[in-house]
Image (cartoon, rainbow, N blue to C red; front, side, top):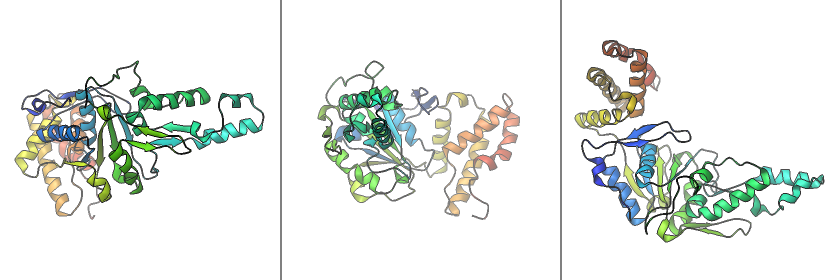
Length: 339
């Protein structure tokens, strides 16, 4: 079984380079010991890992870094409030089936490309691809032959002609699955994953059979939450949980934030006085937000502020320091003054 080495989190260790992919820009991830141990624990006991923490603490980036270090494809889905319970498993293309029915009703010969069996209009989603890419590929190719080109990032990620490869040994994950911001959905969505997370498989509708994973190549499942909604107890029991909150103690907070900022290539050379000034403002605003029981600014807001001042005053640290206070209002203060 392949585990992440603890050397990733040692002082002076190089960050994990993250190439631009889909909607994510090029970046770099600085590991901490807790995150390495949490990923390894999830691999060892084959449990999903729930990542909790404020926005901007690097939960999504941790999934990208884990996939990069393990050499596995990353299959991701961002949850939204309109998501149905089965949407992480498969999607039923009702529009395509209706179009097919209309073509047949008018005697169009294109109807000969496929029947009206509803099983033929199922499109594999993230967990189908992660558990059984062979049957997912077969289903995807059939839909593509019927409808023409079908956009699907998972098909590309699991394409053996690209960088995807079978696990080298038992226990190595087939893929890394990221379910992002699961707290945005109704409780039916996390509850719909109970069978998948417990049995590594799920039943397809319309008599379509059972999608089953293989014990020796189970995916590593990472799930993020911003705590916008309480998650069901049954779902939580099936997860390991990694808290990714920023440190509370000021010295530790400064060190953690500066380390993560300097992991980004465009901010590695930032002047010490600019970094110190931005951290002073951030800590001040975090303290004020916490006193008012509001969500405090974090790493994401700090990166925004530093990029604003370094790009608008390139090569002029003194001007960058002067610009911090003026731009702090746009980047740190997300609530009304009287909120």
